[in-house]
Image 1 (cartoon, one colour):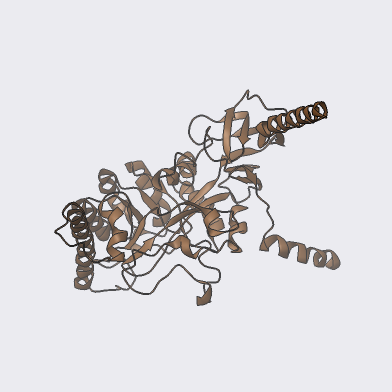
Image 2: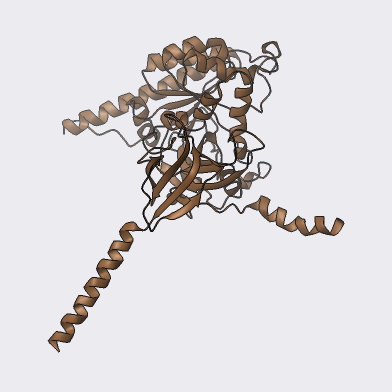
Length: 429
């Protein structure tokens, strides 16, 4: 009896070791034969990307592929890192004309405690449409008021909001008051009122600093009373400590100068968003070392005097001045068009390589996630796009998309409509 038990135990042990050995080789996917564009470093005309679970295991020409690996034929295709939308409302807005489907705007003017990732909608129909065009991550932002709240970076896949979040918070969002007219647009607020708002913003940061000092003093001295809990000031702590950047929405050249001065006086980290007249003060922005995220290039030019192509020339001017730039869709329904904003800038003077960086590695660096995404390198998340040509070109077809090493299904509302009306076209013929 004991002999039988010993034999059975040995068999089970052997089976377990075989299963463990197989599990060690499971999770491998090899994209073979593609023209690899890692964004950082030289292109690899015919190479292999080896994926293990969520991460890129190796990138190069002569990569040893495990026997158990799933092979993806990349012959004739170009491999790019997944693109990153640096400012959008994906999963926060479905139909712009129906308020009940919009979750990126809160009531009130001062809302540092608002976190955009708490309102995520994983089943948004815009997500599958967007990722099928090569976008794999997005910064989803709150809006409204003077201090709108905190943004979060999400992956464009996941069953729950928690599964989607890559990093939160990423930035605190502020709408910088306009101190002057913006071209042909009507002035939204008198200069005096705008100046008061700048002072108000400074007051909130000073309150946060004083609140923090009181807490620290009370923690060290039992005789001092701990200040009453203030949620707004608590959430401003990382900003005044230099841990969390302010993403400041600012547009006109006068306002940009005022925003630079504000950042320097307050000694805070900052990212500028919008920047429609940034080209007028490009050298000053570069000197201040503040990165820039552009708003939608579908907008009208800020001033007729600037020229119809001012928005398209703007990215090239800032990049050539030495400013780190990134593009955004500033949308939910049009987030799929992110690569075409970069393409427009490339058509008006921005080098193609820099345009590609501005939707991949640059946003990763600006948003503080360059260690895990933004390029095709060993150890980074396997966010990979396979296309039959230049990813920024409208005519290019995206063949496959991988997010965290998993191939993404391309079915979406668009494919549903295509399947629905295909039979109708055949009937007409």
